[in-house]
Length: 344
Image (tube, rainbow, N blue to C red):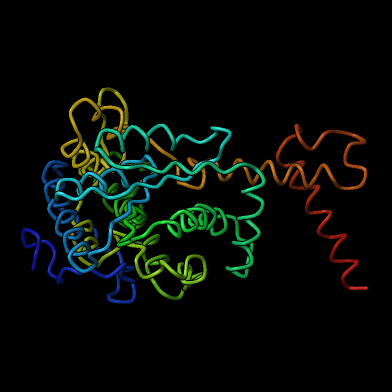
């Protein structure tokens, strides 16, 4: 089945597809990027989003869950499910200090869509415990991997208490195929911008949409009970085939004087949301979940506490207030000292 003859691959109900393992997506091909009109692109995305979620829901009759971060990607997924007549249970993980922005957007979206919503707030001790668990499960301490694992572990604990859990829908991967969070240095309507965006998207997607990456079995390690139900809605060959036809004008624009990314997807979100919430939810900007949920900030505080406990740390300054580069240097020197002791 195709989407307006743009996507040629069959629809899938799989949790995700390693697109770069199914076909070569790394070679530049800017000639494919001919759709300039964001409304045309939005029509393609909306049709595919509804078709993809419909296939997922048909394959798994359990109660659906949506990991609602408060950004346009997850809100669009949740709104599409509602459009199909389904009310998924929404889960949002944030830090209890309110440093992140997800709680406000996710709560507003859940209310607007009529979803039951669990807001899981993590305090500093929760972050410490979950970070240790993440490092143990992953077998490495890479910042972005661990900080993404933390909310998943917290979510899994909540899901363990539910009687039924079906597909867990997430909007992750939309950024990769739609240049989310990226900035183009060439004029949007120029051939140079097409080349630039094509290279950016292909580099990120070809590195991440494959099995052979830093942690190939990430979900299996972190949330083994739910790994096969954790659905990356946008990570399919069909979505890739559609998105690789979009020119910069379909994804970047200016709305009410503000520059926006993922323009076509924001239009979809705007169309699917109730009218009184569109402006605040479809058009707001958001950082990656690791930052917007407050996880990065909580881990930084944990690092400062660790630095403050080092011998002599309070002599010439205070690690709780000094610059981040000074704290990082303190921890590096402590690591050198630890390695010295280990090698004796």
